[in-house]
Amino acid sequence: MKMTDVREASVVVLYHSGYGHTEAVAKSVAKGAEAVDGVSVQQIKADDENLNWEALADADAIIFGSPTYMGSVSAQFKTFMDASSKVWASMGWKDKLAGGFTCSASQSGDKLNTLIQLAVFSAQHGMQWISTGTLPGNNSSQGSVEDVNRLGSTLGLMAQANADQGADVAPPAADHRTAELYGARIAEAAKRWNGLAG
Image (cartoon, rainbow, N blue to C red; front, side, top):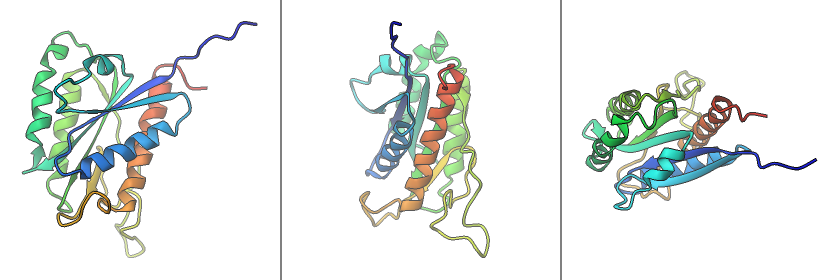
């Protein structure tokens, strides 16, 4: 019997990072996705002047990431969003899976607004948004800042990094664990959505 190649689900983590913290989260999201068998993962910077639009066209899922600056995505990420209008005009990403993550120094930082912005952007492209699928942590007397989903976000992934710490120590480990779980969730969903789950 001849062996045939089995197609892998393709996940792209596309992000902008101003000070390295969001990039650190992006790496953890990618790590979680890569841990799923049958999935290939690429990381792409949204502000790359040679942005790989072909990889985005070929992806089964795109996970968008931006820091939250002044209650919104960064200017660099918004530039990418605007540049995607040509893809939007042809519905080139229609029915791809989408998810999103953000990081800011403040516990809130109005991160929810950034996630809403990413979700609406994905909906405009006709994409299917994936939530965290994780119960909130750190919300009872028995909770801890070490809990997964310690910031209690459901729409997408939230991370928090102290402004006076570098990306080598912030965000904390709990946020990286949450990021890995989110990456894995979207990778598994991409396999199911494309009939690749074994």
